[in-house]
Structure formats: C-alpha cells, structure tokens
Length: 378
Ligand code: UD1
Ligand code: UDP
Image 1 (cartoon, protein in one colour):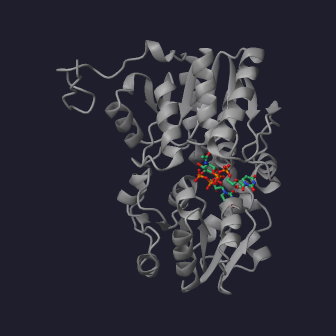
Image 2: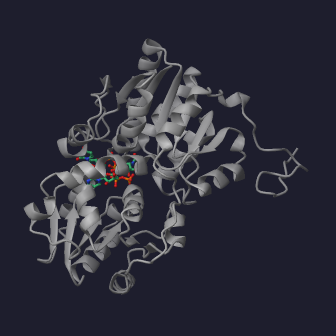
C-alpha cells in the first residue's frame, strides 16, 4: 500500500510515530507535514525525540486565522494528492491539519482513514469539535481510541466502518518511556524533586484567548500549595504577555519541552493540571491524578475511573480539587493495551471504503443507531 499521512501539530507527531513504524514495515508512507507547528520546540524536537522519518513534504503554512491556515493546507495537500496518487489518506485527531487532510482527500476521491475517530465534547464552539465532525463525516474508516468514540459514531449513523483499536498515544508512551527513563533526568536539570511538584499545561483557545479565563487559571496557579512547572505553549505565551499576567515565584513558566522530557516530567509529578487531550490520557497511563481545566472532556472514561477531575477555571474549585487530589487504587485498561498501531495497520490492509459506500443514518420510522426514532421531514 501507498499511504499519505498528514501531520502538522505537536500531538500529531506523537500519534504518528508508532503508526508510522508499524506501517513502514510492509508499506510506503508519504509523510506530509502541513507546517501548522514550526518552532523547533513544537516540531523538530519531536521528530528528533521520536526518531520518525523526516517529512517527505513540508507545506510550511505557519500560523493564521482558521480559514487562511486551513485553505493554505488544502491547496498544498490537493496538489500532493494529484502528484503522489496515494491509495489512501491517514489523518488523526482534530486539528486544522486533520480537517484539511480530510477535505482534500474527500474532494479528490481518495479513501480516508481517521485515527482517534468519534471523540466528541458536544461543544461546537471548540474548533476541534468542528474538525472531528467533518473528518468523521468524510472518513471511510474510523479507528477509535475509546468505546465512547464508537458509541458517538453509532449515534451519528457512522458505525459502518468503525473499529475500536485503542489509543496510539499509549503505544507511543509504552515505546518511549524506557528511553526517557534511561536519559539524564530533566528533573535534576530543573531542580525538581520526584513527587513534589505539579505539572501544568494550558493551550486551548477557549482558555487562552479569553483573558478572564486565563487570568483565573493564573490566579489558581499562583495560590497553589506546591511548586508548579508550566511548559508554556506559544499561543499561551502570547496571551500571557498581552494580558500582562505574572506568576508567583513557585510557578516556573518554561519553554515547551520535548516529548521524552515531558514523559519524565509527567511521571514524576504529584499531580497534573491541563486542558490538553493528550496530557489527560498520559496522566492516566502514568497513574498521576489529573485536574482538567475545562468544563467538559472527550476523555470521560478517565473521569469515570476517578483519575481525572473536571474543574473548569474557577480558582476556588481548582484549589479545592488540588488539595483533595490523590490517586485511586483501581486503574482499568480503558484505552487498550498499547497495540493500537498494529491493529490499525491490519485494518488498513483490509481496505478503506469511499464514504458513499458506507452505511448512513436510517430514514423515518426505522430505529436509528442510538435506538431513537429518526423523523425526516418530507
Ligand atoms: C493546535 C490545534 C489544537 C491542538 C494544539 C496542540 C487547531 C485548531 N488547534 O492549537 O487542537 O491541541 O495545536 O498543541 O488545529 N505558534 C507559534 N509557533 C508554533 C505554533 C504556533 O508561535 O510553532 C503560535 C502562533 O502565535 C499561533 C498560535 O500559536 O497563532 C496558535 O497555533 P495554532 O497551530 O493555530 O493552534 P494551537 O493553539 O497550537
Ligand atoms: N507535550 C510535550 N511537551 C509539552 C507539552 C506537551 O511533549 O511542553 C506532548 C504531550 O506529552 C503529548 C502531546 O504533546 O504527547 C500533547 O500535545 P498538546 O497538549 O499540545 O495537544 P492536545 O493533545 O491537547 O491536542
């Protein structure tokens, strides 16, 4: 098989690494980097740590408003699809690079597979929710990390080509953790003590671009009862500067860290507070309690298992949960066993349907996938 894989943002490099390794054993992968993330710390540092092949193409689209950024990706990906004629396109997650890859593939009639399909937060103000809905509507193969993802697809009438495979980010974590542990520890370099600090990441547009929400998060961190290490996403750095927000001495705001150091920092933390989808799951895999700085999460199994608490951005609520945060004893394998990538390759080898061949929502009078009566106006 000849597969075009689209990546562009930090989590996609991590998601791509294990799949790329499994795929390249018997197949050809054409790796396209849209250039959505481009700072060394947001892109090349990941290729270095993960040891993934350099992209065959980098579209260099950079930052910009959603329309401009996505449009530039569409133009570039469409050109490459015509030039490279892959048998299928692989996208993952919910970024603008995912959206552009999905749209370009669909318009060119190239079968599309979506990794991390079916995740929903049911809030369409989140740009990621729009990207997931479109990618899933267009994909001919849905590869789900969670059972909730499978159910969401069923509710949308998209269960025809959905497979539960588990989380490729768990595959990555299990593969790279021994390597991270074998290196001189970043904790020593940063003067941190194992289990005696909290790790924080914040980058969601809904938190960062709203000065009131960002101010509330900073207020909570400034009142936290322990050392806080905060690797700051570039979007957040711009917003902190714009709002002239300052940190107390125990809050250490540093540049974004590369993946292996991040695993070490996550594993060594007493608790993690984040609005990142990837970091919520990594906290779970590493058995570190997590506070999610959002009002909802796609990764609700981590909440149900007791390891993740939704705290929003109200400082009082954050600090109360912070003080009461301790690891539960039960830790079920909710997102698989770290073999999602192998499963994905086996499924891809079975072929991907074009969207028009797929089962779609049933019409009036029939039972929909959720057991609801679907009414259609005629
Ligand atoms: C994007 C994804 C988000 C994902 C996140 C991972 C979308 C809509 N959002 O958000 O789902 O969780 O990546 O980190 O695709 N910037 C730099 N250097 C870089 C990259 C970004 O300075 O290398 C700054 C720019 O000011 C840019 C801003 O960060 O405007 C936002 O970047 P962008 O890629 O648009 O969105 P993210 O917030 O990174
Ligand atoms: N990450 C990292 N360094 C950081 C912050 C995050 O290596 O400073 C990793 C993190 O461990 C996870 C991925 O980046 O593997 C998650 O990316 P991010 O939080 O930017 O996006 P999201 O998962 O929310 O889409």
